[in-house]
Length: 392
Image 1 (cartoon, rainbow, N blue to C red):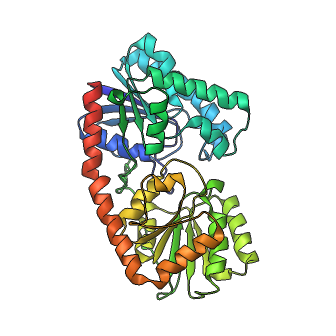
Image 2 (tube, rainbow, N blue to C red):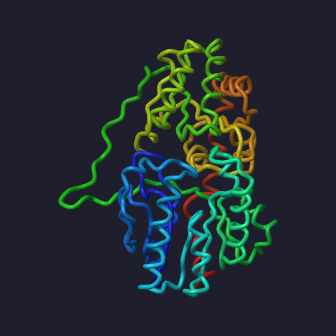
Image 3 (cartoon, rainbow, N blue to C red):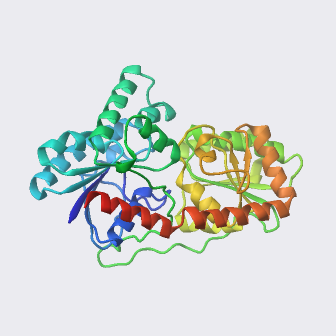
């Protein structure tokens, strides 16, 4: 049986955060599913036996494709719609696995082509319009809510990625028999496909950008406003009054975002105690993580648990995270230091774990054990097998 997977995102972007869709596809293929994977034009192909990657035409004028809702994605989705119809006409797939907004047109095509529909819901799309400051139009947000509810009713299986989304879809009438909670908790190395006549480039050796012996605080992720990177920099300025030896390493962000954070850090007199690397390879982030004294997730709001949280609790490093729903639905005080999402509270939390190595070690050890017990690869594989049982 061959599935059609439709994913409106660049698949895969090797110098950014690996997309959780990759891991879902990888594990499904390992379970014997053959997959035609339809996605955007930009990105680097991955090497997964049994997966054929199909890309719509690449429009460089629309790149880079930003994180979250955008007009670029809207235009690219028009191509995805046409390619979806073409593939369904030629192949008549029995299962269509639709990620995010692709479920809107797949739901409309379902009665015509009579496939079983999986809605892989990584976020509440109507909420994303506001979270990413794309639109505050009540009409547009309302239209997205109507489309989401229609898609949830039509789907044979609904996958959510965190307890908050699970509760959301249950309230909208999705019964437990056709719902699966599959967290984005797998993050192993991505297998990139070698270009014709050559091999995939390997990561260069990575050096730690600060002198050894300085406590290193690491944030790695996007620099979108809701992530709280600005608040973290302000917290670090407070922390430095008591721990002038501390250093802050910020990994990720676009060029304009990096310039903005650099300006803020300089205005606070932080100088070279704050380093911004831009986007780096996943392997480089892993090296930085092992060198870090503390990992931090300063997110200000939101309800989706980001993939990086699972990496952080599995890392063996102490985590300081803000007390917001994105974190607290899977984290508590036994596995990390939870703080309010403001500069003073984040600074206090960082100072506490830096000044109390014994407590920091206990938190890190508890977090690693928690990850293995609840979110490790064997747990993930079991949930994917359950998905296959529901649609076969």
